[in-house]
Every structure is written in structure tokens, then in C-alpha cells.
Image (cartoon, rainbow, N blue to C red; front, side):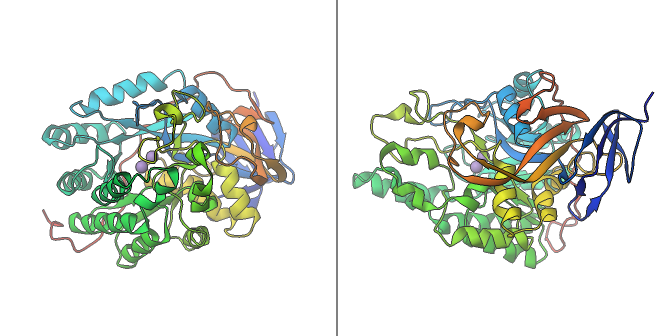
Length: 476
Ligand code: MN
Ligand code: MN
């Protein structure tokens, strides 16, 4: 019997903190040795000239959820996780969305049925709270945290938004149970007010979409969330932060010593509100909430990543079809900014976009890339050190990257089950050529070569973060 099942040799191994030339030895699905000149394996892969990175973790993925704006997401757990794997992502955390009046227990069992035997990479579930009633906060959440559902998402916007009292009760149970609360921070009342003025004036084309939710609407929600986090004395994570004004609020909270975490997404780093100059339906390919901001904004967000304000970069993958009566055009024939489903696909291109625009262009170093796309989400969501790093004992979730490979992103290149990509034509430098999950080669030179349905549910740990000081509730 060989000492290793797999050796990846001659590559440059990168973690969130170090860049080292060494071989990686894998046994029984885990990394068992990091050393020079390893020998004695069933399989040897030469990674000369390549980066050997932890497989990506995409902590914000929507798959197989109920209709939104009347239409369904197209990706299943099978197609969505295969697309993730092609892009170098070996773990996703997707959402189990509570329908109003439904128990969380029923909700998670429904999503297990959707995912099991279909997902090809490992997965966990965040639970979207639509109805955090007494039963949910006092009984269901404590039981579910115990079983590995350690993060909960609250919306401040959309029809199913939670009011501040509901969010405060959620933060309280999260503090007690050491769970993470993710907040979509936009002020629903501001959006409704502005949108109504536009609609009343007959201004309904898609370029009104960003205008109904400008940066101040996100800034206010972000500040309110931070204040509630301080009051309850519990960490929170602001999801898909789009603008520098919300980012400045996060930095303000962090400077006060509060445990405020921030996530941003490639769409805010690459796209701007110039996309809404596209005429007719074309702009629907770029409709997502919050919207992308002005042309100065991406540089500000990159600096926020480089300086540690943002810990996480996720895709917020929402695979709505574009040119289909069951897709964004469902409400046709004319596009209307309040009727087109917001959301775009991105689970496959996320890593390449951030690698190319960030690392290859010198905006962030490769260790920051690994930290924000793998290690930090693992730490924040209770998966570390099993996932998100290259270390002895960790799962052998590894992507081998060719930093010189050039590709042009087109819809045809991608495996997402959707009819467009908002990144069509984007030139990329740096691409994952081989992807391993628990030691299994699952993607090789553009082909999925793993078994079907091999992904496993991840029971995640409680949040291991010391809470901040100073809340009036601290000793309760
Ligand atoms: Mn959201
Ligand atoms: Mn989302």
C-alpha cells in the first residue's frame, strides 16, 4: 500500500498567511503531509509553475429556492455545484429559505432533499428567517445550531423584510447560541417611497432600478445593523456590500472594536451603474440588489479588501434565466424596474474574476485572495480548519491554478444552467486547471470527472468569536 493516495508536487502552496514551495501529500481524503520531495503515491500530479490553493468557499449561493418575483432559479444543486467546481470552488453555503408560517425544521429537511445525491461539492445551509416567532427563536434555532446550522440571514428589504424588533430578537438568540447573523442591509421604506414616485411619474425603465436604492439607503441599513449588533453585543456579517458608503460604516464599527464582518461580490468590483445605460431588456442582465455603483466605487472596494475591511468575497449566485418567459422577461413585453427579478449568476466565475482583477492586476496579494475566498468564510461560518486552508489534517480540497492562463469569459465557457453571464467578454488571466474535493479529482482541464452526487452536508461549528465588550446586556 502506498503512503499517499495523491501527491501534488513542485507547486507553490498558498494559504491566507504563507506562500511556500512544497509538495502536498493526501491520504484518505485529507492532507497528511506538506514537505519537500514526497514520494510513494498512487497518483502524482505535477504542479510546476502553478499555484496550489485551497478550494474556494462560496458562502453566498442561492439554489433551488421558491419563486422570487414570480420566477424560479434555474440551477439545481447538481448544476450549481458542478459550475462551482469548474470555477475552483469546493464548498458552498447556500440558503434554506423559511416560508412564512413554516417551521425551520421542515425548511431544512426540504433543502436536504433538494441537495442530497445531487450536490457534487460539500455544502452547508444558512437559514433565511422570514418569521422569527417565539417558537423559532426559543426552540428551533437552539436545536438547529446544535446540528450545524450556525448562520441565519435577515432581510431589511423585500416583501419578507424583518422589522428591527424581529432582527433584535434574532441577534439575541444568535448571541446566546453563538450563531452568525447575516444582514441584507437596505432600508425597505426608502426604496418603496422612491420607487413609487418614479412609477407614479411613469418612469419605469430599468435605469430607475439603481436610482430607487442609492448608496445612502444601504448606508443607513448598515449603520442600523451595526448599532443593533453593538446593543446586543453579538458579531454580525453584512452581506453583498455594494458601496463605499456602507463600507465606511463597517470600518467605523470595526474601529470601535465591534465584531462587524463584511462581504462583497465580484459584481461590485467589476461592474458599475454604467450598465444601466444599456437599452431595453439588455440591462436586465445586470439587475441585482443592491445595484452596482458609480465608476469610482470599485477602486474603493478593492482598497477595502486590501486593508481588511472586507473579510469575505462571495458570488450571491442567482441563476435566473434572461431570454425566457420563465425568466427575467416573465413580466414583459416592456421591462419595468420593479418587476424584473433582481439577481445574477456568478458561482463559477467568482474566483477567476477576483484572481484576475485582484491578484493578476496587483490590487491584492494572493494570500488576501485565499483569505477572502476560502479561509475567512471557513472561519466565520464554523468550517475551519477542516475547510478553507492547506494544512495537515484539513480536507484535501485543492485547486491547482495556472496564473498565466488567459481566457475570455463567455456564456458558452461556463457550466451554470442559465442562458447568460453578466461577465460576457471579460478577459481573465489565471484559471483553475485541476480541482480536488476530499482528495478526489473532480475537475480536470475543463471537464467534470468526479462522481455524481458526491457532495456531503457540512455540520458547521458554533461561531468561535469572542463577543465585544460594553453592551448593557452583557451580563444577562
Ligand atoms: Mn440579499
Ligand atoms: Mn443573496
